[in-house]
Length: 298
Image 1 (cartoon, rainbow, N blue to C red):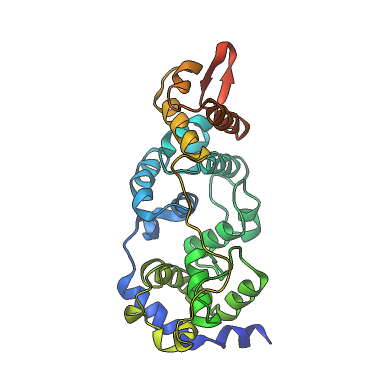
Image 2: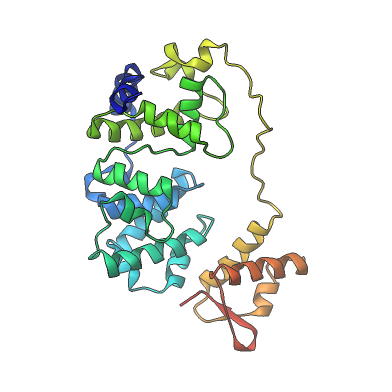
């Protein structure tokens, strides 16, 4: 099948989804023209596994402090971790700092337009490179996040949920659905993501509000239940992730290096606490110093 044929195979979905998006899209700061490519990039790092409501205040503070990649690159990695706050998965802060440094040193301080150059930046994978190229520069790329994959699984494949990890079949489906026109493709990428976030949600899809409900393969099949492996929600309480978060909270709030005794006070179980601290050191999020004190990386 030719590229043009693939691109038009589901063109009947494009207009209703994009029209819906034009009417119902949230006014998010990274979607505004003034955000620029750097604003889009920061949002993509922050939004990984983190809801919009938690990202918004940190995003605004981050861009106010570091409006350009070079501004962040002049700071220590530890300051990036400190400013990341409680967004979770703080290694993203280190990766964003590393990417900003690479942009400042190798790209004249500007987020590159070229997809391959984006993909070569530290911490930028297939999804993030496509998202930046599409949302910041209006390019034609398949942008497959969890929301988009769920929309395609239901509307086209006819199943309730996509596989746990993105498959080659999903990528082929996404290319089949991608509009041929570059500007329309970029709009489609944003629109399908928003549809999955607001309407075609994981637990309680609002099919009555869906612009393509009448042609949705899953609904036409009678909305069959998921038949794959059980989908387990992520737990947090009592996990190493929680302990790591508590340890980092102490270090973020401290002006001076923190003694071991202050870290010992945040969690009652010594083996788990030591494992969590060792993991933070190994990940480069915490730096051990002489005399048993710790600090954020410099």
